[in-house]
Structure formats: structure tokens, C-alpha cells
Length: 141
Image (cartoon, rainbow, N blue to C red; front, side, top):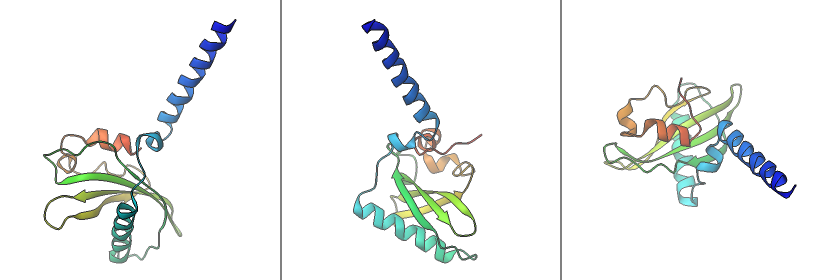
């Protein structure tokens, strides 16, 4: 009887973990930014919004950083996802990257409500495009 309960509990735990991974598992595989990272990412988002010809005033809901180590072949040292609420548009995701070469800093690479990061050249990610997007909960068809 105890073995059956233990197996049932284990099976339930595995099912919950699988469901969490399938439904936006980025929450468990990413990390929150430090205060300095958060400030720099927020500034990049606000700079992007200010430069946009259609004025948007996004509310930042959440920022998460990818745990996938940067590829030495790419121009970027780290990747992040920002979840936004945009008035009159709704939910949007934003893919940002920290440029490690000249003019270092966070840059907005892509934004939208679907397939964010998919249209970017693979070279942006070095050899780790799928790993970065998967870790951030962004998927491509």
C-alpha cells in the first residue's frame, strides 16, 4: 500500500513538472535580474518605446534572464525576456540581449505577441538559438 502511494505521488510530481515545462516552463529555468540588470533592461525598453513611431507606453510585468551561457561566436553575452502589457494592444513579449562588443549594453532585438525571436538570424544567438528561446519560453514553429 505504501509503495503504491509513493509511486502515485512520484507519478503526480513528474506529471506536474512536465505540465509546468510545457506551459511556459521559462519560469523555472530562468532567473530574475539583479537590480542593476533590471534598471538597464527597463531603460532599453523605454528607449525602444520612445523611438517607436507609434507611441507605446508599456507596463513591464516581468523580466527574466536566460540561463543558457552565451556563445563566443555571437555578439551578445546574455539574453532576457520581458513580458509587457501594452495599452490598446494587450500582452506582448520582448526579447533583449546584452551586447558585449562596442557600445555594450542591453538592446531590444524583437517584440510581439507570437514567434518573438524567430525571425532573427541564427548568428544573433551564436549556435544556441533553440536553447535560448526555449529557456525563455519563446517558441518557433
